[in-house]
Image (cartoon, rainbow, N blue to C red; front, top):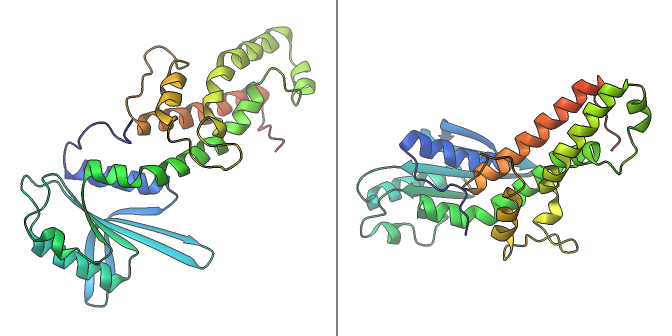
Length: 250
């Protein structure tokens, strides 16, 4: 199974940033080292993630402990109090070396989860994939349209250019369209149910990477999806500059 990240964080700061990036990709407003106000006073937390949809507020808090020793139960007790006092939906303590005896029991029957970074990635992988696939479709759809030689949206505009510029644009369309299809949602989700095709996900991604330019070989999901999003966004900007305006008919 291809992980979100394929390497261990180099330090506690990178661990915080990675956890925050995962939540941010899921459309949370995310903050690192944020002071929050609880009923017992202000507390500084490593990662704070908040999302408000209509009248529903969802909050997750993470403590990132890249210690070279297991986390004691006293840390779990303190964090469990913070999560309860603040009213967060869930809390995560993410440890490099696991947890001391009694720590797991201290988190029982609560919404606090004790995980290594690999366990955290596995736990949240499906929800994260759901979000990044939809975001990729959002930025990729107009790019696929503008690079598709079978589309006729821009024929009139294209005819206004001289032959050299038309030829250059056609070459770009040919160059980019095959790779732009990697942004298509139906690569990753069932057409009818809309569910992720998890059983085929790794095979699909490995096959798609074969379309990438030489030297672009993502080793993890974060690298893969970030590359494709940037590819579509930057490609659209390139066409906008060529046409002299943003051309969107959807």
